[in-house]
Length: 355
Image 1 (cartoon, rainbow, N blue to C red):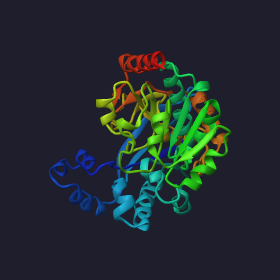
Image 2: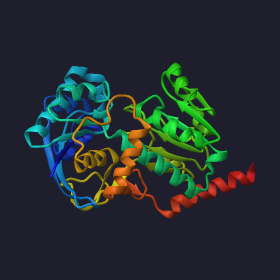
Image 3: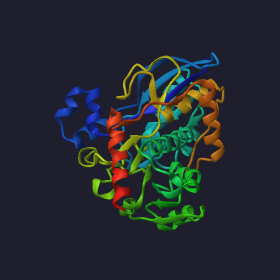
Image 4: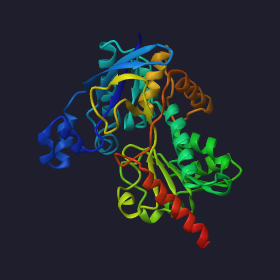
């Protein structure tokens, strides 16, 4: 039986209070100073993963003590790589044969390439299966609220990133119009020009035209606000930390926001910790790492700033083979209920009637 490891990290300084309760009483900058002194550590053991084929795997969650803000603003890239590399060393020492990089550890620097070169075991970011589930979730949600892609507009925020590029390439041709949104206009235009219906911008206000949005940036702050969104839109937020402001949930009941990449894992699974998800569910990036172990594909897999369509399709095949599948929709740590879907559906109907 192959063993895997997966790297997690605090999204905000206050997340450290889950392990160090006193942290909730201190300013964020003090907490980050403390975290900068910490070494990676084992958080929990993962047991009970069993494929439909009968194959089994188990593993570890390993904590990198750095927040996104620390990785991008307060520490050197070398220091960040050292911390993530320490996670790889722990994984190897504990018998893991492959390791996945979660959240910001998957995007910082060169998207895992340097980490993989120096790791004693193979590395993946999990982004291939993340793309697969983001596309599946966005399209399923669009159908549920009555959006017909053939007459609708898609927007991808973070379109020059590894996940955003592939989402644009695979989903864009299915929509009447596609808007690629990124920080660098030249790079964003290059992606938009790959599809016949594409346009590019750096302005998030272009989201007011979009019926379906996939957002997956490396920002450490919320960038999508209530005033940016069209009535009855569907937003699939793949980013951690989130791109979509919690204000959208409070102020725009007509918008359906779903979290990207929440997956049911086969077997009698015990993760040893909770992510705020229902039991036996995990992020898609975690699931990709598990599937590589089940497939005996102990190799570097999804790395760098590009995810190929072939990799996305391959992980979809593994998921079907082993019994991984998209879980029910979640939004801001809660299950999406039928009432939320109906509000977005009704908002679209009203908009059509007024048009």
